[in-house]
Each structure stands twice: as structure tokens, then as C-alpha cells.
Length: 217
Image 1 (cartoon, one colour):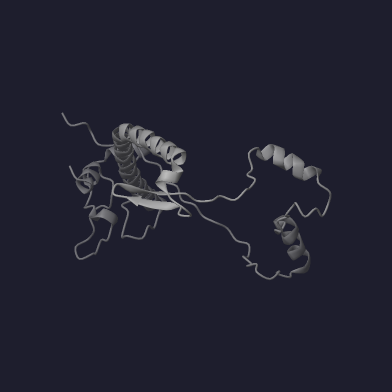
Image 2: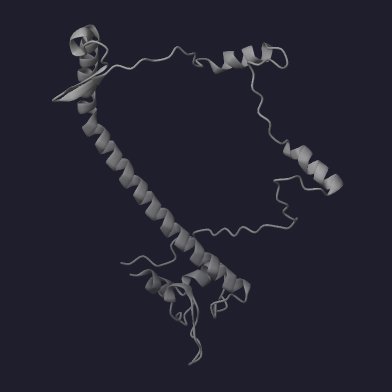
């Protein structure tokens, strides 16, 4: 049963409109049955027929939320299926690649060890690269350098340095609480800031209800 037919079968949607009245509902749901629907029973009584498209009553608004929840549930289900498919492909790919990756690592280690041990034979004179039919070798000089190994130890060392030490770089960034307080006191907007006047936000959340259709025998 299609979604539109299922909605029509349980009576969730607009009731019949007078002849000649245009009805523009989401999903194209048709007129509901004159018999009280399971949705109306669940709500504790009959609902005003939503429509035309723009909601006029709380019952209309309730219907809109129900349709919103239904659409969001469909999106969530598709995303779940997408993730499951991607996870399955990645797991399968990882299983297939595991053996060749181990083998490639072994051959790489073997090749690097042999090339370093036999460098004078692999590259001659001042040359640092050599091409072979099945690949190439390239030696490159690396500069001496320090790298952070223990961030906690580095932070403790930085804290022990005197004020103004050239070994420390201080990041300058606005303290938003103080900037906001200054604006409230003076009304001045610092360069680079955007002013947003006070107002309110609205968030409409829809809740997917349990299936309201009777189980088919």
C-alpha cells in the first residue's frame, strides 16, 4: 500500500472539499473516510479537516507535524540504509585488502632495507634517484628537527618560561564576554563584528507516532 493510500485509509488528512475547491496538500492525500479513523480514536475524538493547504487550527497544525515526522522518518531510514551499505562495503573492502596490504608492507620493507644496504650499487655518484622497469628508488635528505611528542610536558615547559620569551607565541583572540559587555555599555560595534538584534528563535520538532493502520490478516 502506498503512503498516500495508507494515510487515506486511516483518515489522516483533509476531508472532502466542496466541488470546485482546490486542495493542495502535501503528498496529495485524498478525502478521508466518514468513519472515525484510528488516528482520531487515538487523539480522543474527531479532528477538524486540515485544509486548504495552509493550517488554520491546532488540528491542522497537528496534521502538519504528523506529515513532517513521517517525511523525516523516511529520510532517517534512507540514511540508515546508506550507512549500512557503506559500512558493509568498507568492511568487505578492508577484508579483501588486508592480505595484499600485509604483503605490500613486507615487500616495501625488503626493498628499502636492500636499497639502503646496497646504496652504492643502486645509485652511483651524486645521483639520488634511479628508475627500474618495475619501479623507482629515490633518496632524499631530511633536515634536523624537533617534533612534539608529549603535549602535556610541552605545556608545562611553556608555562615555566618567563613573560615575553621568544620561545612562546601567544594567539590574540577576542574575549567575547568582555566585547559584549563593552557593546552593552557603549553601543559601539568594534570593526569586523556584526550586530544581531535581540529576538527569538523557533524550532518545530515532529514526533513519529506508532503505526496507526490495522494489521492486515
